[in-house]
Length: 234
Length: 234
Image 1 (cartoon, rainbow over the protein chains, first blue to last red):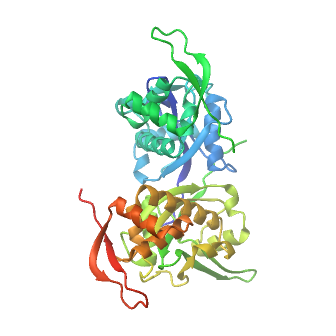
Image 2 (image 1 turned 90 degrees about the vertical axis):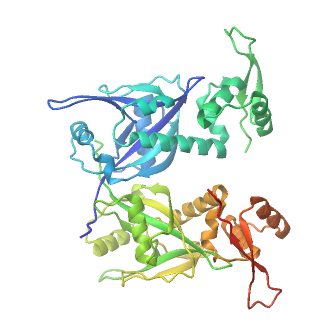
């Protein structure tokens, strides 16, 4: 007989950052010393939802706990509900020890967030620390639950978002940036190598940049002009 | 104090159809005679999830119950988790009487489905019947929970999908169709009125149609040629 079933519900955030060269994703170090098992791996920032909390509010709380910020850009992209996602007993043990709730199945709502990488990370939970990891290294890392699949799905979402709303990408760059920085960001998101001239032409057509009178500093090559994002009048 | 909370979880399907003139959405008639209250309104096809069932499997089951089909196109688009979505006591009463489960908060995963409108609807639950409604009439109907918002969100999703993967639209048309039928479908989805010549030009560029040797029958005007969808070789 098929029974209505009530799984637990969480949010998990794929937070993207950009260090000028590589696309980064923010992961929480998961450590646990237990008589029968030790856990030393990584997980996405996430949380079970609270009683009167909407899904968006839960994701915003997770990011606020990490960054202290209240207005990080968030976009829900997919909900992961395969019963097998909690099939690893170590994940269930970790959940029980950290949340004090007995869990056998947990459905999680995936959110993508964009954050400047120089943001100070002030994680409220002193047992856990958050670090940026190169997106290309994800495959070789040990991640909790199905968090690797969620990162891959988050990467598809940032590609989709930057096609539909390219201005979102400016949230990953410093306030003033060079065209080269913008091109490198574009290239790491799409996994391509853009032609320099074609990229400049494309950006010009988009009419989203404003020239500043400043140039980059402390570089050995000829200093490039800095641009800023042109806020559209509504 | 904030407590981890375990809401119930369901799937709801926004099923689109096309009758040659209007975009339609499939709704379930919800009737309930109760000593204190009567319910006579409509809701999206949906269900709480079962114990070992993935979200995709739950949505497929819901559509199979309605149509008898096993391979309806389904696409998850958004999860709705506002605690206020179950604030109407009549919705909670209905849930309790039909599922025999006491529910106070329910998070639902929204799926979009595409179905040919001439499909026979064989709803397994004899208490409920399913009917097609004009998308433009949704505003004036009384719908359960936040199902009106879910329909609107589903409409945004079909627009997005038909931009990214235009071949999906052919699932709403008969196997052989006229260019006029295709244009009308496009127009009702996007809420536009396409210029006939421009539309024909655009379709030609997409190279997705195959001319047949057949013409429409039983029409008072000059019979138009029928086309079919050109399946791309992989």
